[in-house]
Image (tube, rainbow over the protein chains, first blue to last red):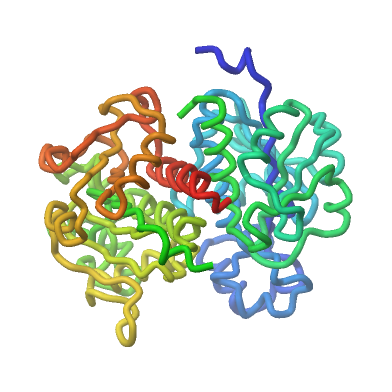
Amino acid sequence: MQRSGEKPRVKLVLAEAALETVPREIWGHPAVYKSARRRGKPPSSILLDRSIHHQAMKKLPGAEKRGRPDIVHFSLLEALSSPLNREGLLEVYVHTLNDYVVFVDPSTRLPRNYNRFTGLMEQLLELGRVPPKGKPLLWLKPMKLERLLEEVGASYVILLSEDGEPRRLREVAEEALEKAPRAAVVVGAFPHGDFTEETKRLATRIYSIYRGKPLDTWTVVSHFLALAADMLNLI
Amino acid sequence: MQRSGEKPRVKLVLAEAALETVPREIWGHPAVYKSARRRGKPPSSILLDRSIHHQAMKKLPGAEKRGRPDIVHFSLLEALSSPLNREGLLEVYVHTLNDYVVFVDPSTRLPRNYNRFTGLMEQLLELGRVPPKGKPLLWLKPMKLERLLEEVGASYVILLSEDGEPRRLREVAEEALEKAPRAAVVVGAFPHGDFTEETKRLATRIYSIYRGKPLDTWTVVSHFLALAADMLNLI
């Protein structure tokens, strides 16, 4: 069934994602040094990960939003495995806290194992693409969220945030489908804290889908994708 | 809002889950020995994990269904973080391939990090509960799926399988909510292959929600929970 020819694709953006290599300020910290040595890599090449670098991260500015690559991992797995993506009706982008954008081929089969995923992300951040040769599945560009939205033609930006206007997720999905392909749904991929003002300014609409309470990123992603798939009679 | 007092809870069972410690037959395999030593544990105490023990697993019967604790990890994270669970409207159980059942306190905050999750599961399989003292969050009993369903009063068993009768997931969620609390939705938590005949015989209904095509366990779980939450106006 060639659905992708019939229907426009919804754009999903994981924004300000807590995905980065260990920043220079803490390369010398014992927890960082030890974890890098165990991996056989320099500290500059390994991902910042709160579950390992918790002590070292205390010194970092904005630490509460950083060091959670698992959020990108789960959320991308939900996005790529979803019926919406499998029918060719989804585009997914990851914008990071440091203003890089990860472009994702929709046919990518990500590693299910977290340690393999972090290895892949480290390769991506080092080489700018994976696999290193042939057709890339993931590729990286230094890019602000604003420019990403421009480049992909997302002129109607729906930001999901617990501070937004209360709205049924079903209505959010309906609006995103109606406004596709120029709609982008933006979900924060950081553990705590709020979007930057710079991000909020890009939003056409800001909605809260759970009565002002926070939800995990993967929950927002999967529940949005489920309601969109239901509306399109995919499931 | 005291929703849990008003509405019955839906039961979700992750069945035949690919969660077990390394079986005796391959304790001596170099890949197993090496990974156990690195963890400072005996081979009998570490989880079987295809991403590490792939070579060693070739000798195991039914290997294609085994060694994927990440499936339980993602699916439990989706279940526990879901609005349905947060409103007190979900019970979740994990039945393993070896006929153990993991009982889960709905307020459990599981480790997001995979390596911490496997450590927790290893403790659970060794001690039968976690944490070792105080109110348990997870606890384990040797128990067949049939007895679990009896014990929790699940007399209306909806099994989701790509071989089942085609059915909209929305209708599955509606049926589960209508028949609650005696309904259980059973989802396979193994990577490949089919449910055993023993499991299939327990089903009142067998439905396929994606036109006969397989979906990842966490996709089925999250999409089911999203449609149920939508129907109950939680999101």
